[in-house]
Length: 101
Image (tube, rainbow, N blue to C red):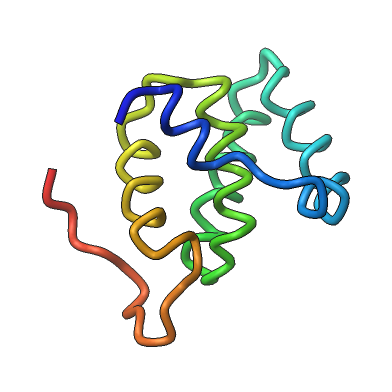
């Protein structure tokens, strides 16, 4: 997938934007920081959302992260994996997916 396609896959609707407004604004602020440790908080939240099976929240973090760091191959692969499940965690998900790339 190219960068524009990944951003499109991870975009959200108005209802999601309203529901997650504070989270989005906080993450955007952290990603605009020059401090890599502050930026890392968003990356950690992205993967914690994935592991916690909150893939809707993970999708938001992925979108924001890819806007700031379009060349992040790990997040690219994660988005492709989550998109296969329409960003909804299957009940039978074992808590990981095997890396094949």
